[in-house]
Image (cartoon, rainbow, N blue to C red; front, side, top):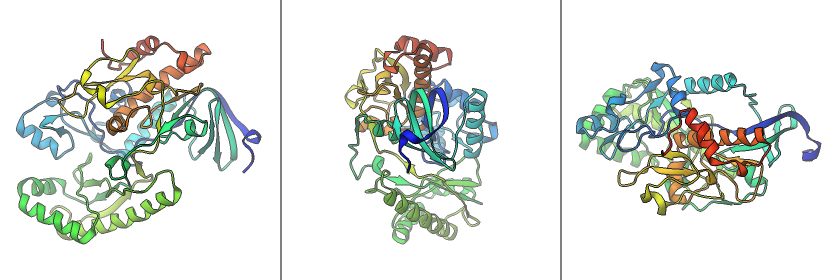
Length: 402
């Protein structure tokens, strides 16, 4: 490796965003964007993105059902990942290939210079060094936005972070999602809902035969099922050997699940292995230590943060919506850098929902606005007035407390 100071300059810009991939590598299910009353609280970019998807690539409840407590509707949408605690929510499933194209075209329309097939290294607050087939090069910028999900840039630049997730917790685990094609999901869902004793026997047999076992989720099509991949705990997404081990296990499990379901599950008689995710599904590695943070002890307050830049649905109906402060995106020590996505500043409990895709869209939009304002004014991101950020976010359709 050549020293960083000898890297060739690739580009000079106002703002560079490092990362920006959606969670898990194979994005299909988008978590709740409504509160428990059915209000659409994660909007802005998130709403525009889904509105631009072709209708055939989006499956979810109609807006008239959002917030419904109707038992029949809740039972129907619970099996389709859009009802929780007996309440219908807006948590659609999307066509992942259409999502990729949609994201690409939106960025190109906005004038973003895309750089694929590059690996960031030695992140700096005035740019980033990356490796590609061109070798080692640098992108210099007034503001760097770290959306790697793992805090790769702020960690290498010396920023403080936390990593306190219990090893047995779901948020510590990794997996590789996969698609199984040639299925009849309505038949499978009817079996699951109407033949409970047989379904329980089926899952018991699956655990006995396979060890790690998981049942499928719906997708945007009735002939495709998604398995989020049996969760692998005790392995680190910052260790290349552990990540390789998860990949090996997951591909074996994909084949084992396909064979088992084809032999034993109604609706899977003609199932075949369709696609494994091109990237590991990682829930947690590092979390930024910011100038502010989202904390479990504040969930019940329902009060907007003084520097609010977004609003997230809460984990259950007993909590009000959660205010997201700008300080959760701002490193405590570093200047010239913002963080967005699952590694923002929060405690371990709050990370459980702030890592989800809609919340990553929320913080990503806010970080983009703040970075643009900072670069335009020639100031550090921490010096940007949250009032100005909120003004632009409202213009972009974001939902905020009045």
